[in-house]
Amino acid sequence: MTRRRWALLIVVALLAAYMLRSWYEREIALEIGGTYDEMVKGSSARFSSRFPGEGTWPGRPKSDAQLRFIDPQYGFVTPKSSDFYVIFKGNVIESLTIYPHIEPLLLDDALKVVLELQDQWRRGGGWIKNKKDFHPSLTHRNGVPGCATAPTVEQPIGMPVINIKPC
Image (tube, rainbow, N blue to C red):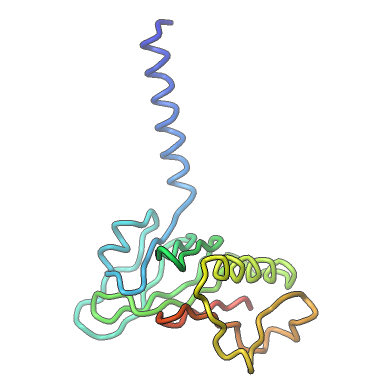
C-alpha cells in the first residue's frame, strides 16, 4: 500500500472512532442563564422540544446522557443519568435538578457519585454549602441515615440552586 492510502485509512479510522464515541457518549451541555438553543447546539444528546411562549417549563433529555455544566469556575460533569430536568423561563435556562445515575444504585455506589460531584465543586472553588445546619455534606456511608432525608444541596456563590438527589 502506498503512503497516501495508509494516511487515508488512518484518517477514516480516526473519523469512525470519533463518530462512534459521539454516538455512545451522549451529553447535554448547559449553562445557567444560557438559552435553549445554545444548549441544543452544544449537546450530542437530543432534548425535549422547546415549549412555545414565555412561561416557566421543564425539559429533559430524550435518552440517557451525562451532564456537562458549563461555567469557567464552577463547571462539572456528571455520570450518565436518565433523569434530569432543566427549568426554562421563556428560552433561558433558570435551574437544574438531576438524579445522577441511570439505574437505582446501591448506597455505596450512590455515595461514590455524590462524593465525586462534591469534590468537583470544591476543587472549582467558590461553592458554598447551602442549608448546612439541616443537611450536612456527606463524607462516608455512616453519615447517611437513609434516603428519606432531603438531598445535599450545594450552591455556587451568586448562582441559582442546583439540586443533586442521590436517592
